[in-house]
Length: 92
Image (cartoon, rainbow, N blue to C red):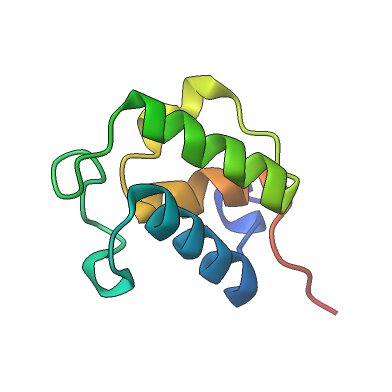
């Protein structure tokens, strides 16, 4: 059992995370890629990062430690951190 592959996000969770980031950063959806830097490419600062984290915790009911903000510098990083803390998708 490998912890990194044990949890994946559903398409709905990924869409919600993308929507949160787009809304908080006030950018167009097509501007956001999984690998693009939220700081360098979209001007995110620490206050916006905290707002994104708060929205994730509220909207997805996922508790993410603030220490992990450094791993959340891209949309892909956000997906990975949230998957690690959410228990991920469910398979029947």
